[in-house]
Image (cartoon, rainbow over all chains, first blue to last red):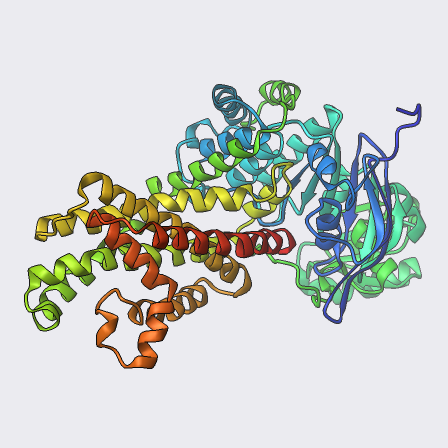
Length: 329
Length: 271
């Protein structure tokens, strides 16, 4: 072992084509060990295909990648010993019970029968699945299925874990549970590569983020750097009555002398301003005009805004040319 | 918050990796998975058990008198053939199950494990052989009830069942290849049955090939299924034909040698 361990993932020029579509078109990544690295992009951007190449499930058509120092093609079996994968479709067997799933994996990883059973019991308790242990997974809720999926990924603690959209389709409570599990995993020293289309998820969990669009990395850095690269922060206002929005738009434009953006929420607007004093004056101007404000905030740009600035199109609006498997939300 | 941090951290800390499992052990684990699925949904065995019963009753009582003069004589001739037919039809399900499996996320996990590459497939075929054994047992038991008397006794009958099951495992690799090539489970089922039906009917399962037109007789006598039926009849009648048995085993080995590696390759490449 050298004194400088290799990065968790080093990919250069990864390419994968499906027919005429270049799903991944020259992706470079350098993921440091021991942190959460976010890969952010809309549906069809090439995230899943990239993760599948790194997890040895797909063979790259071009470029190369090393995971924990091992080539994903030439040393695929060694890579498989060090990583585990939680795919976009929950990677558990729906026709077995939760307990059987974990025993099955324990056996496949080399545990003897008694040890596999004990490990299953331990994990079911740790993931609050002990009551559902004997039920078939097809009757599990989305959150339970995802927890079982994560438990299955740590039957043997992996050095690197691939998480592909782990919270797609989950309610907020289940999502928070998954986030807690991810944080605990990282606290234990595992590196996590997290693919997500949720900007707040990347913002919450990731230490560094690569933004992928149309098969390429278009930006890379810490969440703070990405936000700073877009420029100033924004002043967000949410009105009590959406019908007031046109009026509020005029008042804010006049007061702040900056373009006002209506947001997706019909009662909300934002203005590219980061001066607290001027923002406060604008709120008073709205009050004088008789427009009631539900809340307002001033802050760094959200990753939504970062994405829009980087790609020229909003995150939800990605093209879906690539045949990524979609999970109903 | 139901996941408390302490058991979670403890569980994370105690996941030390054991040495890799042996090939055989990994295959058996996948075979166990197949058993568990049968345990949870036993209804799936209805196909396997009812179809042979229908065929046996229908052919014995509908055609027996016309084809062989009496139903009891025809049963002696027909039963080994129905045994072959029932078990071979069951082997199509190996392809259907695999096709269904591939649409599930769990295959990704299996493929990302450091195990012997063919293990998920060999294990599945091992597990399916239990279905074959069940289909074979149903046919033989019903035959005994209807009056079938194997001269070869218990050992001859068991040997005949074993031979048919071994051949079905070889043939199953053809259907697993088809299962990984076609898009839907029903397409796999249809193409499997469409291939098997003519091969089974144009064999010596139902009639003696001597009565057939010359060209058809040549085809029927060359059909490997005819050889399997002849070998099975021989074992059950206590007149085992070593040449036929060796031929049948050789065909099973050849099918496995060609289609098992092909299945493994398609499985690794999928997705």
